[in-house]
Amino acid sequence: MFDAHTLKARPESAYVHRWIDGSPMEMPLGKCVCVGRNYAEHARELGNDVPEEPLLFMKPATALCSLHEPLVLPQGQGPVHHEVEMVVMIGERLSGETDLETIRFAIAAYGVGLDLTLRDLQSRLKEKGHPWERAKGFDGGAPVSGFIDARGISVRQNLEVSLEVNGESRQHGHTGQMLFPTFELIAQINQVFTLEPGDLIFTGTPAGVGPLTSGDKLTARLGNILQVFTRVA
Ligand code: ZN
Image 1 (tube, rainbow, N blue to C red):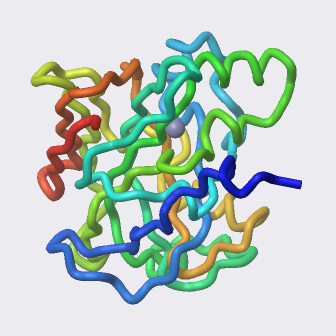
Image 2 (tube, rainbow, N blue to C red):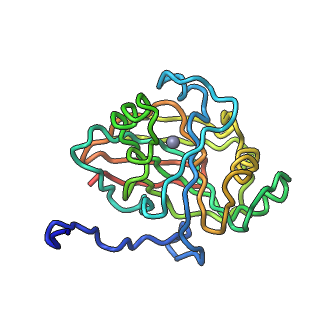
């Protein structure tokens, strides 16, 4: 039996998907499908091979939180690394779809997020051949920005994905460097996982990942369409 006093449930998450102006979107919360090693330079910086097919993992909806609020990091489990990524929100159900135009029109919105990672824990899990969820799927592990309507955006343009920490450039890449570009990536993902409205795709991180500490001030950018200032609590 659990002693009620030892159960430290977190307060119910207030997170909902929002447009960039802060108004709530009428979209349910769903899973986050993430892709590892989608930028060759980042794969190399962690000593990994460049994959032949997308390396996929998931974070649950309970990992979602707002990038616009101070970030609360897990304590006592080693360094928490930032991985800035373009985030794609699915607007229409996709299952077994390969047509790239259909996929394009099934995208509701674009945002920017952090795939927060307990790096030492992830390394230990990798060594043992264990799943990564403990290092990736924790509560608050998926901070995301407000979203921009996909109708206004051409992802065929090369969007800059970048992160500054305390005024210093840490991560800098372009979506054109992605090994699996957005639509092709989603075409592969939905052969395995049916994608539903409100699901998010984290499209991978450029090189330059590193640890965050309390008080860090962050600026995450997606091209010239999104810029988010935030800090670590
Ligand atoms: Zn990532």
